[in-house]
Length: 439
Image (cartoon, rainbow, N blue to C red; front, side, top):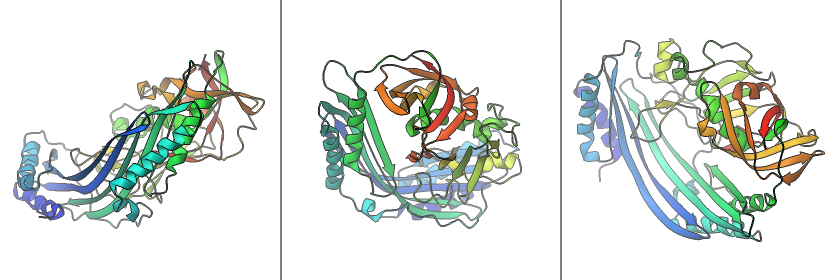
């Protein structure tokens, strides 16, 4: 059987032969195992092979794209990408694909145990999660998911870029509910590049959260101190603030941060670092998905806006270097701009003991409805608890929190020591000195 990477290398020449000024190949091959949980039983276990080629062709600044998962149609797809570029209007601001540069060595993104994992072991790990959820009396799982992925990616372009890298990934999640008249729910998940997840603990943590959330009390409406746990803060910042750091949005006037480089926009103790080289990071690789070497970008330094995130196109428009933030969902799509591993940095302390009264929020629902330009949000707080005399007290029956992300970042007044990775965001619990709570 012909190696798809050999076909990918030929595809670069096919595009050039068809008349592309520049061309780029993004090729992936891999294997995944996915397992679905319904109630307390494994519902579906599936093993899949992943293989495909995406081709970008540039003609007079116009970009054409095509993809295929059939190696025998790679030449056809390459020609189609060129034809697609030819029918588009040329872009005078196109400055070229990335040039060949040395990429950094990154660590802990490949675990051979995940490469060689069999479907029976995946089922066993999923069963451990279910058992963890069932270990708490009067709580049962309602649904869950397990996924293991191993893939090798090859990025080539006509400027000499050639990056080949293998990685692995595993994640698991579960939802639980209490039994009886008053229903409360709890969810938990974990994700890693290595097979180092405690699957039983995922289930038990979700069940404990559901159990602790029973017999909720009402809370008043007003401005309060709010402790946003990692899942809650990550969800809010991803759907409000990160879009404003996207250079494409900035250049098109769709960002509230346009023209604010060098301005103090958050608490002076807060820094945000995007690190594409972070050891074991979910977004870590030696290069981004255009072949630009990964790097560390200080986006916010001591509250001051320091940089936006760029791919090669938006960077070229400003005659600067890409920050290595071009990412792809799959070989079937062109790159978009996104964070790699966003680290929230704020001096830590025992914020619970420093909070006499307030509320603590585990997670939120509805952050995707936030206004990405203004930063305004209004979300339902899930698994929230009152704080009384510096201790977590009664669960809260129903509560909304609302505000503006730019005001929230200014009102951060502390950070816990519970640094956690939530997808591509690494953050502790953050204490916000003043937030609108609606009971």
